[in-house]
Image (cartoon, rainbow, N blue to C red; front, side, top):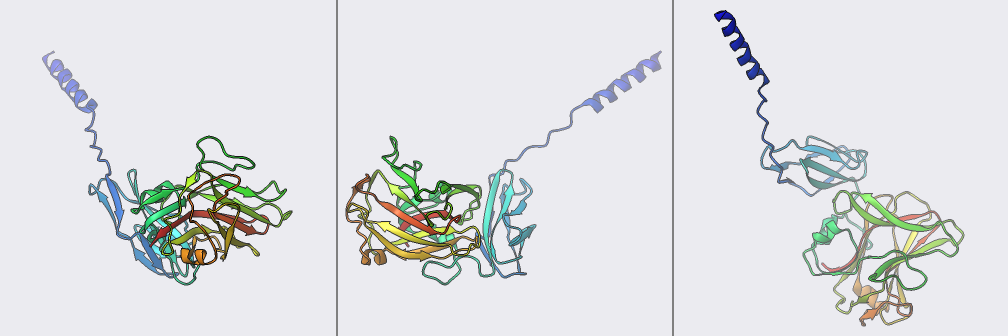
Length: 325
């Protein structure tokens, strides 16, 4: 009997040991993840390595991804160029993400004044910004003075927009009803993921082109813009569409619809591109921003107006702004 009691006690002890919950591993939250490069230029077939730093150290395993594997692939931080174009490589650890914009081959943009590979982050490093279109993530990275004249209302025509609306996106295309604008979502030209930007889409060829623009209805003051400012549009045309062309126009603040046409921007073949002009060019061509204005039917100010030639064409806009370099 005594042996049975001892046996029972031993079994009970073993059961308690076996049923005891294992120690729960401590969860370490990732504070940040950073990359040693924010932009990278590769030729097709070449490789380079990105180094990710996680804080606290070893808090999580870094997971790598690319927005466009047909342009660049990444394995454990090693990036390889596949074809001409731009891809955003992301390093994720926990809930934190860091990105690098990878330009392969000749990608990266031919500016409105032509020529060299573009790093779009440089366009967030100026001062005295007048912002007409830009996502919140990019806007938060600007260190200079920001005059925020971005869209806060939808298409309004005819008549004035609703209460509180100071800026709308207008689109007009004669009697064509399949012209529209809306938003796209993905990786912006500035390397930010999961952001939205605007697009215009022209309708059928009933009228032949699409016109649209950013119309300022509220009080605007562009009188501080001088000849040492630049006007920038960062854009892309999503597909290789023959015959697509885009002209850009700015309107004076002196009343009526006095516009200055500064010519065409090039087709980008699906990659982000930039068109940039000195404000000295616009002023020399007769643009007048000398008055503070209240937008109305009799005092229309478009910043800018765009004309996309050809039906069924698309134009995506990442940012429109005026600034000092």
